[in-house]
Length: 319
Image (cartoon, rainbow, N blue to C red; front, side):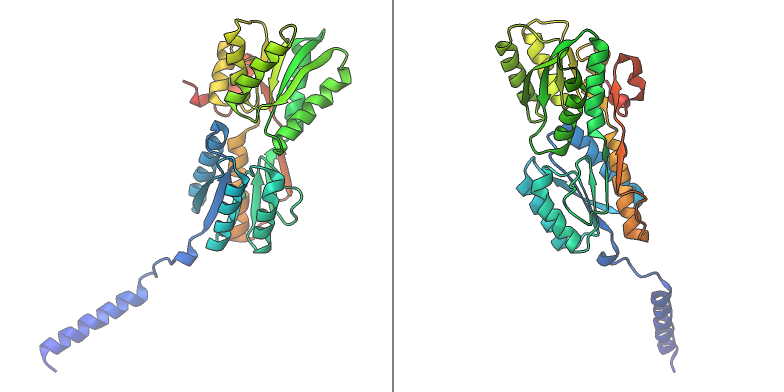
């Protein structure tokens, strides 16, 4: 055999050896993809939630497919169905409307895809792996208890309710009434209407309330900070003072207004912690088959005033 032939054979042997010992490249099927879905990224609360989803997914070494529900249950349903067809390994979702999203999530469960809900629970779908959220009833109760603390002799109250059909809105309203209805002779809700968790609607509904009432209320309580901030603008436009405005969600802007006196308080429900726990729970099941100790985990919300701003989850985002 010539020296040239021997060189060719040697080179081939080296190449074969390298192929057999080198690790095989990762294939698409080995990549863990999960759907992370929120009701709508027009809301700062859900932007924060999505950021927490993505950060925890990266930390856990999985790929997050981002879904913006655009405040539309048909859109969020389509995103879930597309994820099922794509073959995602799991879904972590804050549903836009719990009833409307139930069929899509049931479809995912039937397809063997684990689902974790965050913030908004879809109790009617059996087989959901876990729910991580805040105890929104207790959050509403915290708002009411703060009202009673601020006004021990009684108060008139405007109540801006959240999005119809959204479980946090339902539960927060329930909690508020749980406490106030027991002392309805002293704490009178003189105006109550949904403002859809929306700032512009919070402004317009508050304007309508202030125009309709014979005198300004002592308190405006809102089921989220966006509505509370809208109410604040309506109050300022009428040059009113002395009205306690209480929000919910502890957004950075709301925390700034609590610090500066525009809002009296907001409710912290730790959404970043909820979101990270949701992804962690989902990935633990996907990777190791580990089921959560509890099917439902609820964090207890806390009223944030000037006195305890330091415990707010997003305090570091204040400018």
